[in-house]
Image (cartoon, rainbow, N blue to C red; front, side, top):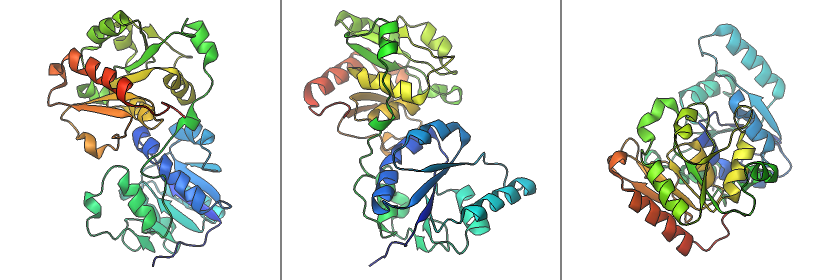
Length: 322
């Protein structure tokens, strides 16, 4: 039987991307429940500091800008910070080349959970390379001797903030609206379904307003749609975005961070995937999510997306975001 490490000062490594961080929330909750009295620090990129500042499962944020591993002064500074922190257990939820190098360079004698060779609590499943999506986090925690209840069912509704003022500003109070995510990062234009205008027409005929909340890469796209476009200064942060999703009747969007956010808030969600990346590897499959996966998104009919949203509303009986 594997015994979990005794620990009072834990470091959890999770750099990104956003969708992966969202999926790891259940693992963070499991770590907290296994170590209720420990001080838990997350090592992540500065871009996610505000996200983790609201996370109830961690106590502190160790911002790591991920400087080149060959940048000697930067790595020396990182080593100094790590040694001063005196972590007694590291859970590597990133499990890539960078975090593996941190083990060898910074933590060779510290109890470590991850896939790197030499780790005290290394993932050893014979089929570990075939375990993907949310189960990979559960498997890792179990093989470190931890109890895992939440890794396969994260719920990040804690992120949502009160958006009543925004709803009033955009005349959405007490009006049903659908939250649309028509964009994606500029590097992944292929993820964009091109028929949101037609979908909006159908939804508005049913009495729904539609809402978009663009980031920097999809402002121009959202301007072309006949939806209420909500912006911050200049963009909304993640808590406000989560709050708007929470208040929506349901969410329809592409394979991008905000859609994973909605899915793991237990919001009713229709997620659209093309052939660039298999949906089953993304961890997005949940009872509240209808995944539509096609070879060519441009050929995905509006009626199919519209029908999927309607079926979810009829058949999913759980409280959308609790």
